[in-house]
Image (cartoon, rainbow, N blue to C red):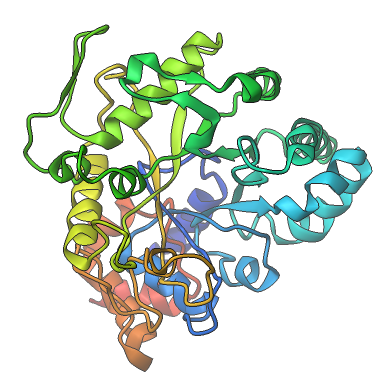
Length: 392
C-alpha cells in the first residue's frame, strides 16, 4: 500500500533519528552544568537547545531527570562518571556494569547518549590515587559497554586540564609533565586502541587572567592583533584558542600519538568576576563566545592541523549560582538562570511560559526544505507537529 505524505514524513524522521552517527555532530557543543538552584527544568532546556540548534551537550553526571527529558530530542549527550566514583569503578568490571545498567542502559536508544566521560581533570590534580584509578576505571567502563554491545556507539573518554602540560608556549614546545607522563601515556595508548579523542579544557580567559600585563587581550578574544610566530615551526597564530589546540597536538605527537584527534571539552569566558579577575566582563564574554562560534562555524583546522576540523564544547549553558570559588565560576553562562540570554551571540532565550509554543513556531520558520536538512537531529514527537508544518 502506498504511504500517505504525512506517514512518509513520520517514518522518515523516525528512521533518520535511529541512524544518527554516535560521533560529534558539527563543530559546536555546550556543557550543561547544573550546580544551581534557580535554572530552568531539563524539559525547558531541551526547548532552549533546539531553538539554538545546539546538537551536542556534555553533563557532569548521569542525572536521570535530564536523561529522561532528552528522550527523542536527537541531541547527543556525553554523560559523566564523577570523580567520586572513579576508585570504586576501577576495582572491577562488574561495578562499571552496574553503573551503566543504572545510568545508561535504561535511557537508550531514546536518549542519544554518545559518550561516557570517565572523571574530569584527574591527571595533574591533587589526588594521585585518582591518577592511578583512571585507566582501570576507563577500561572497566569500556569492557562493560562491549559486553552490552554498546562499545561502537558510546565513546569512552576523559577530559584533561592544561595542568597535564609542562609548558604550552610556543605551541611546538608543548610536552606532558614528567610526573603525569607515566599515567597519561598508558591512557592514551588505550584510547588510541578504541579510537577515542584527546579531550582538553582550554581557556584563553584563564591564561589572560593570570597574566594580563603580558598577554594581548585581542589575541585571547579572536580580535585583530599582531599574533605570535612559533619560530620552530614558522607557524603564525592570530588567536590563543588555536595555539592551545595545537599545543595539545604537539604534546601528543611527542608522546607517540600523532593520529589522536584533539577536541576541546571546555572553553568559555566569564561575564563577571572579582576585582582581581582581569577581563571578566560581559563585553569580553560576548566577544569571545561570538567570535569562537563564528570560528567553529567555518569548520576549519588550526595552523598545525589545517585539515582537521576543530570541535569544541562551550562552558557553559547557564550561570550556576551555587558553584564555589571566585565570582567568575558562577558567571560563565551563555544564558542567565531564567533562560534569557546573558549577551547576544545569535541565540534566543526562553521567553516565559510561551517558550514551548514559540519553539514550535521556530519549526515553521524552517520551511520544509530546512526541516528535511535538519531532520537527523530534530525529531517531532507528534503527528500534530508534522501536520502543523504541512499546513503552513
